Image (tube, rainbow, N blue to C red; front, side, top):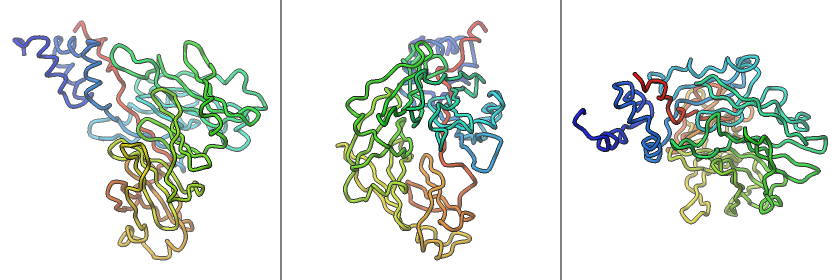
Length: 372
């Protein structure tokens, strides 16, 4: 490698398969560390490789210990490094409500957006588990008794010279709230605190949205009239599309958006014991991709009984490539459907309703060791 030019070395290192492998390569020698720490190299590498997923957080429904971290590869990722015990009061009082990159957006329990609490702004923070750092997000200054809180989301900041889009120095929080029945959006940044965002083109549609889930870096919500609203997690912009009329979308309590194994969104609907899954075509329209009769897919699973499907199924949790359900009248029998194969298996455990991805931070922290 000593006879290889810097340009050739850069081309070789750009082909390292993952961020974790890249960090290991940087530990081998000083020359490699300098090459990898170069902002231009990091920017090119980020454009060629998808982020490395460290694991997933979920808000377990039956624990007071706070969110649980499940590593994507236990042999590679040490879950202890992703503990949230550094948060104010420890991890127990906090709930994950969004994630982006290596950051988590969290509410303090008892101040979230349910019931009467929706009339006040929740205690909110953004944290980076690996660096054990957090920033409290102040409430909106003009959030008064005429306001109703809907949701907060993590949004990318400006791209840095290394190609990083979000970190503790440049994250944004987007807040949806209504004032006197009219939807408003405000954006928080570290440099300017809260500022209003113009949503005039979409505001008439955003009355009483139902939040369906997140996929592919965006959030999705449904409003009356077969309208699907997309919030782009990179830009913070809203767009809309029309859903196909073959479904009764107004029965949206049994509708959710999950991410497929290809990283693209899927809309899933439940009616009795049938689950339909829709994908977006290249032209932008949504079309039925797959359908599964759950009573047939689960036949043969331990504990199965035909009576479980005499009524509908309850959606317990969903995440990348899966959904977990159980029959309305027997919560003890839980099963998961693989959204790629539509095959069923017994659920592995309580994962709460939503699963939140946590990526390895970018850029990697290499600069501290450049002189060695």
